Length: 153
Image: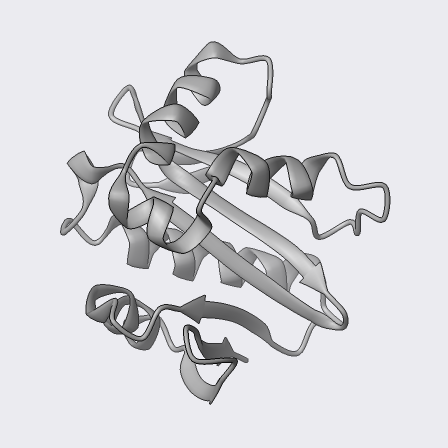
């Protein structure tokens, strides 16, 4: 899926060496570990789940001849959650805001009955809070002591 600005979403392929390499890089990043503990396990929970929903997806975001990051969606109960991880090399360049905004808009267009999408953010991650607010997510609640819940309509 072409996003413009030389960026695209490519469905994650567990047999693609470029995709596997990106996951390994991200899995060794302390900021990613803080959120996912094991990104690889999180991905497989989405793509190899026997109760998989049609909205349960993992995409590699590519651009400038490189893999920039991952964006994922998973249905929990009746709430669709978006997660993302950005390669350290591309942080601070507005890629996460662009990824989150474009993907959430894509989900609303593709699934018209969807009224909200959610993103959960570690309260200490100020950059992610800024990204969520920048693209229209609003803080809804605190899930537990470690996550804040944001939504977009």
